[in-house]
Image (cartoon, rainbow, N blue to C red; front, side):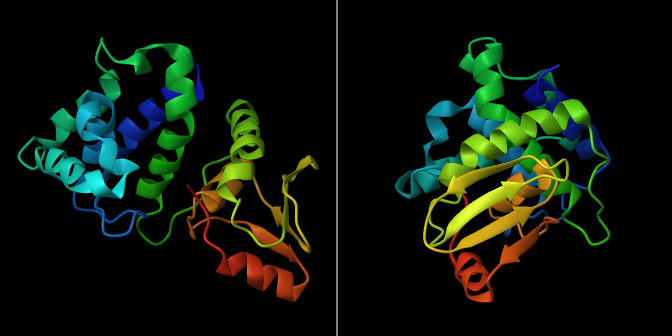
Length: 208
């Protein structure tokens, strides 16, 4: 099973056990807001432009508000059932490319929205895909770092994702590094390097 399909099922399971009003790692968003975001993204693409383009944000926010009276279980069922038949996300390759990281990160946004969270247990298959994502997307997500960036997983594999004067090494499980790269503070990673390099790295924005 692809990462996107596995995370869709796992996120749906988690949401079924989550209160719609629970906070998430997405600042200001409850679990309901996050799920509405996902449903608009893949079911109303004409209204999802605000996700990437600030000028169109009101259109996206209006579409998300359209779910305010939708029963919670119905929303979860819609996510679980996957994109509509007409959606390009129905194509496995497109779904994996567009939704693999998206659903993993948002699943953790829900899981880690309250104190006391713990990372999920390692999974060899999932971690292999996540490590590939870290190596590819890290170049973009850490692009604003003023120093070089190396990512390294416990198994010993490492990759340079940003070159520059100075160096910071990010140690952690692939999923934790990916969450950190997307700007989540609730990620268990260790930063190693000269204090001035680490400080400069931490001051720089991360994510898309």
